[in-house]
Image 1: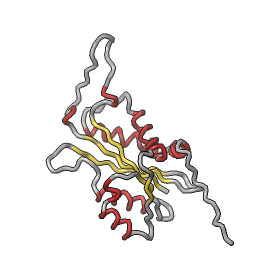
Image 2: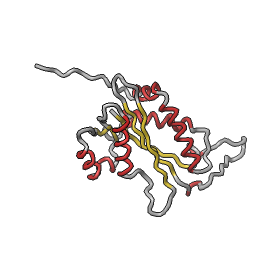
Image 3: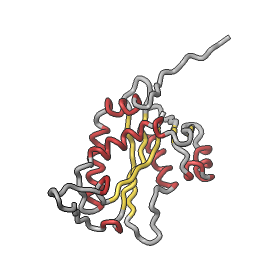
Image 4: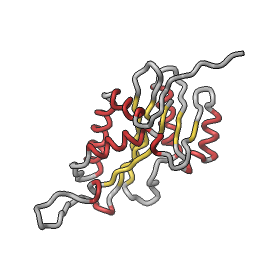
Length: 193
């Protein structure tokens, strides 16, 4: 079972503030500032009883160029799902994701139907981020970057990759993200008459 969600980070420091001497306005010089780009992250937090949990993610760079998409494209979502299919033992995945428009699109439905042998999709209820362990991963990521100031998108990309790799190498942290939702992965035996 894989939970899929997205987050993003721009060049502005989280919370829009930085430290400064007492009595002085905080000023942060950032290349690009408000007009700079943004990094979007789509991640799958994957769980299987008896196996270590996994985090699989992809980055999308938005540099505010003409004709460039600000968010993940359908092709990028398909690529992420296919990568999970390749990387996870057993090859079958069950993504659980929110009700983002692209998740309900005709093209995505056609992709899911075409790969029904290894892909089954479920949707979270509306406004239920507390049921998504990926939200806890994003919280850990953003908290770890609280005192980090990126100078450009490449610097920000490197830091995001580094922080996500640290989370990937600690399966107990990913397991803890599921615990915070109150969900369990225990299977119940089928009732036979």
